[in-house]
Amino acid sequence: MPLFRDEEYLRVDFEEEKEKDEALWVKCKSCEKLIFKKKLKENNHVCPNCDAYFFLTAKERIKTLVDEESFSDKTKRIESDDPLDFVDTQTYEEKVEENQTETGMFDSIIVGTGEIEENPLVLGVMDFRFIGGSMGSVVGEQIVSGIERSVEEDLPFALVSSSGGARMQEGILSLFQMVKTTSARDLLSEAGLPFISVMTYPTTAGVEASIASLGDITIAERGALIGFAGRRVIEETIGEDLPQDFQSSRFALEHGIVDSVVERESMRNELSKIMGFFN
Image (cartoon, rainbow, N blue to C red; front, side, top):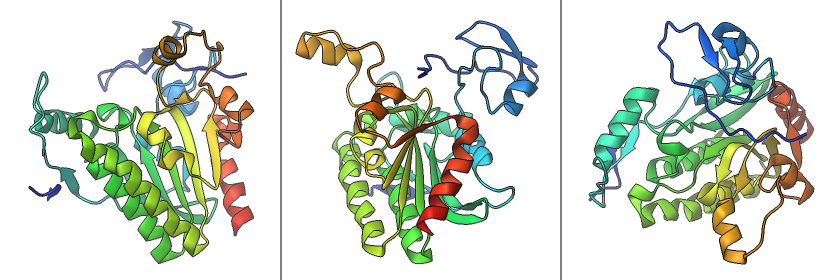
């Protein structure tokens, strides 16, 4: 069966409520205040009352980072087959189709070329809305394709992660993507090209344990949740309580997991400075 077929820290414990297109207001689940939707968008989806971060879709994230009209979508038009015939409350194929309809994406990542303050790059951005941003065979292939494009075009590669980890519906094939993307990352080193990893809320499990942690420069967005296993699982395993800020972006910085913690509104400028340094 073919694998593809053509076709201060702030931990963010909330997501933007699903709204009808005509809705004018959205409620912040952090401070519980209503926000004028237009004002929220103008503020990079950061609550103007309490500074809490709302989720960004992949397209919204790209818009906040790249120069206007510079992004060219190079996402491969492939989608995963269902090698395990996986079924829970619905088949895997139905779940993928449902998420494609809701998000307008082929899978949980968009990959393309663009410029940040006139610095060209290949950019991959994950979207948590699509099955929790999980990495299955398609996402692994898209990341590898982005890395190969970077090498071909002699451009830096940046990956913005927002993922719950490997996609359980694909079983061992999803775990293979950890090895596949990690191996592909070596192509950038061999070509002398920088890899910039940006961890956002959440970057966890198989994605955090593989490609997201392999950047030459690794940045955490303020409020990012970064870790492998969940707090409860770890506490039950070791029989100890963990620090309150465990797995926060600040905790990751203090323990050498990331190189810096950056505000959302400063991310574009930070990436530009990093690329300017490597250039």
